[in-house]
Image (cartoon, rainbow, N blue to C red):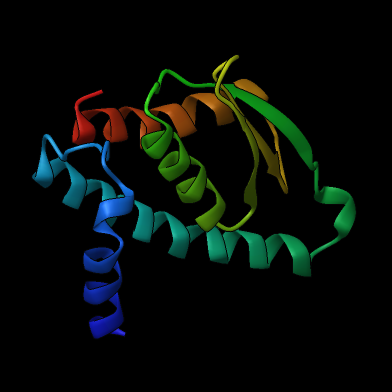
Length: 130
């Protein structure tokens, strides 16, 4: 897996002529740690939700306005959201700058939007300087 993880990016490097540069690598390490921790916590929360009564669930589609112009960084945001159990990125409307997300349980839509923006979008903008 390590060999593939090193070789594939090296071989496909020419396919990314305008790839974004990492402006703050330490912020990237902090974001990575946050995402891993959120994945672990979300796994427990989702397991607890689906084992319990299903009428406790409040699934919803949410439109999250994003402030990211770079398509690679926007895709990275969508991937992070999808990696976190209980949420799946459905679409990125780059023209309207909207990330459409399906969430398994939404108690407060505004709070969920604010959380995704604060925990993932803002740090991504810092990491890539956009």
